[in-house]
Image (cartoon, rainbow, N blue to C red; front, side):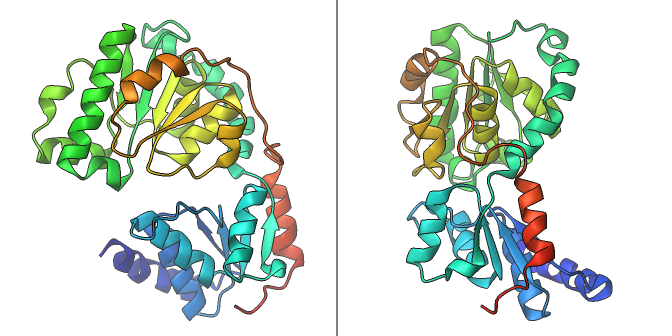
Length: 296
């Protein structure tokens, strides 16, 4: 239904504005909707963050990734190994462009503004004293049993480490907590309202550890030198793990509290995987303005 509503809303805009390109970003339902609208209306489609794979084709996000990649004229990848995924699926080289990670562009552009906010001081928190948790993936927050486990592990981490644990109450998470009557698991946590990206970068920057299922959150933490734990069935970014700042916890979150202690001992150091240099958008623009899209 969400994908359908996005298609219905987007198609008249595309027909009216006649854009030169449609950029479908990531693996949300809106990305697939954008690819469908572009493909059916003859507008070239470029997919940012193309080629990411978990191997679980029952996952809503994986379905979106697979279909958006197949429908797109140009595929922009954030790391070299995702390009190999696309080639294994039969997508020709002339449609694949390794440009780096646009999250690095955002972090580089906004990190000074984020630092100036000094949010930990505003919230009466010491720098590197707190855990920051943000979860929004359907598989983690929709199922009652999985969500109860996740919140229980966050409670245990907060109590065992003695550190304030900030839980960003995203709309999907809030609705699921209410629907499954899990409000009793929230008191050990410091629940905060959703924040904008600049504020999120500020909170990530001064956290002791980030706990998340969001790729952009994990990537931001890696770029800022903050250790993180990803709660997903499969990792999506091999480079954040190989760089040593990210660990993966099982998709059901069991053992998350135990993993926190080890992750807190990881050395803080900003990491820059290949082409995560703040210039991905420039490379994307160069391709978009100089390359005629190939026929899928």
